[in-house]
Length: 251
Length: 245
Image 1 (cartoon, rainbow over the protein chains, first blue to last red):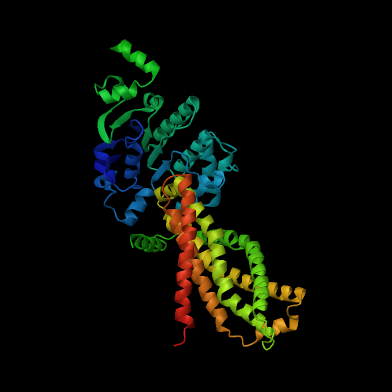
Image 2 (image 1 turned 180 degrees about the horizontal axis):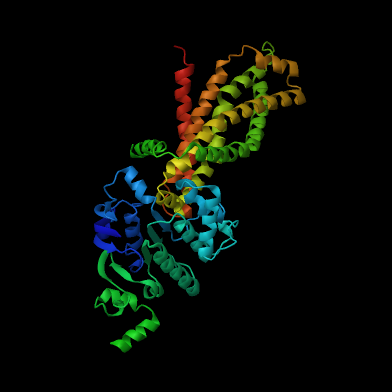
């Protein structure tokens, strides 16, 4: 479980996050949603401290990450797997080397065991046989899947996904969402997904936090999202022609 | 001043939360190939021509009949060892290796590869930058030696081909009143410049913000700042090590 308390962040005069608190449960996908520029990715980066929040605290299973010393932070970070928006694969390494990288750097295990583990996770994300390919040879969806494989290879307790569906076609997006959901439940990780894709929200959104202009306006599940009573959330949810028509019928 | 402070903090992070020697060893070897071996052709080419041109121009300026011809190669030797091989080639080195280092790290930054390392709990400065600096400090002095030899060879060849001075005169001049300390001085400069180019270029690349355009800007800044640092360090080292007490 991850808990955030009163997180605020400004860049210069612009306040990006305003006093955000919340809890992200273990074993199910937690979604942070909102329109572009509302601070979703900044919040995610504040949680893992790639961006240092101005105020507030982050707790990983009651361990205070914000006030931990350097070694304490490293210890917690080694329990984190993260999928970045563009995959963030190391260009000079093959798919296999990319996926094995966390094991080489952080795990103590025999070489054969590492290889088995790499093959297992590549199989899991549907990339069996892609071991020797370079990142430049992969499609967007494949890069994301390699990113997921690298994020889960070390059995992380916490999984973060920043816009896992951006730039992907609807079918591949659904596959990625399902993969995240299955991995979250199988590995019992605390998963946080940042997205603005309504298909993902309706597909895997068990615990959703809605951000609007840096503020948390709503929290709940996918079953409640269409009748939240929050105008800004309704505008976000019903922001395509089909949904607008649906909204008209509902009202 | 803020920028200089940030640079020194950056250097401090090189040695915190270090990766194992085994990890660094292979990374340093890779960087040595990238920095050193891949630069040899350029260094040989530029140095040979600089040596040849220096010989021709020195000969052009020493036309008095009472000046022995071997003075030409003596002057070329001093110029090569003291300035051309370590300093002028450092500017070429900054243009080739410094811009590449900065571009490489800048691209890693904007594509979130550095963030990926940090999230894993790996000190990205130690992992990515330390091998570049160590490789640069090891390889640049070797490139300077290659450069010095090639420049003197260039002078020798042009002297022989054009008949400016005979090979025996050239070799006599190169050996005449040779002070071994100039070699030590050149190598001290080489180590210093190798460190400056690698650390400044890495610093500029590491803190790139924005997109592809900013990666290009960082590379340009890396070369400009490295060249300024080289010239300042060149003066300071000359003042410290060569000025008469």
